[in-house]
Length: 436
Image 1 (spheres, rainbow, N blue to C red):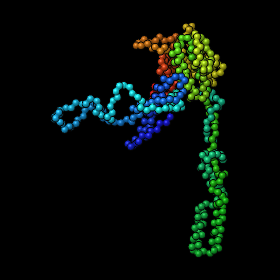
Image 2: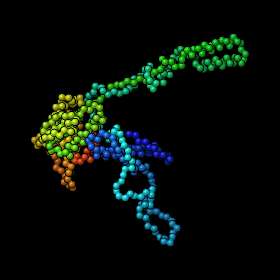
Image 3: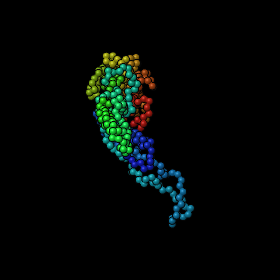
Image 4: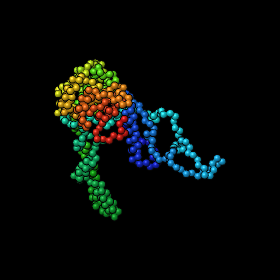
């Protein structure tokens, strides 16, 4: 997305001022996109759309008198109402600014509304996100190509003509073949003209004229630029190293998950799927859904199947380990895991799940994100925090503040996007505009 500042510049505003304005405008658009994203359905996540930003945000800051406060002295002529030494009270409201009247009521309308294409919308939405700690454990077999300079060639398009190299070869050829220069011919012309003016003998002039004709023939025969001089810049597509990565998506679809909870989990995974397919060309995605048993499913089944049942979390972790051993060797692949659950689990299974996670999964994976979805009415009003779930208490014994295993809770749709950005934000960067 490109923002063009078409405002006039009568005050000689500096380039830095315009750059600050463009950054502020882009931050407003990004914030509007992120706010708009919270209200979208899963099917519309990857679509463009209309957004609006407030007029106040794109105004250029100016210095002016405040409409209230401060102390001012004026000399007024007086009238039949006020005499010398009277004090006039300050009028209520107004008294400065541009003269516009305040609106009635607290509601307002966005001043600028415009439509973003799908690509512009997703670029703004996915800006500043990345898979954390993506290491190049093994390079893939070259699907990605990188264009690099590869010397010169004798054929090519006019746009790739290497002028300096062509002129250098042309000069070398002309020197080697002794092509007469224009200065030599001009010098001979001047000599003939001088002898003609001085009345020199015809024999001497004939010799000089024959010499000039010889030089002219040689000049025409040896061209200034010959086709053999032409050189073109050559480019080659070289294999570019690409890291292999796989994302395991584990979703609890047991009977304890209400429709609201499933909607939260599916929204999270839809965002994750959109992020990976949009920003990475070489990341495999494995969908695993589980009740009291787990299975690998395709994307359609993962998001739209209505099958449900009991809850045993360790089945999903075991299924993931089986797939990882069969297809994704941790020595070659960057392993990422995202798990969503309501936290309910069989009491006897929590210790097994914690053991699998701590002993086998975390040592092999780059990043593990656990998202716990809650009821819409939680957290309860004023001072009644919900009791941590069994799975949350179990995972808390494993999680570390700055480790590669992170846990977050969400209760409402509006919390999904900020949590998602927090989990996959680009580390070590100062994001302008802030998260929504």
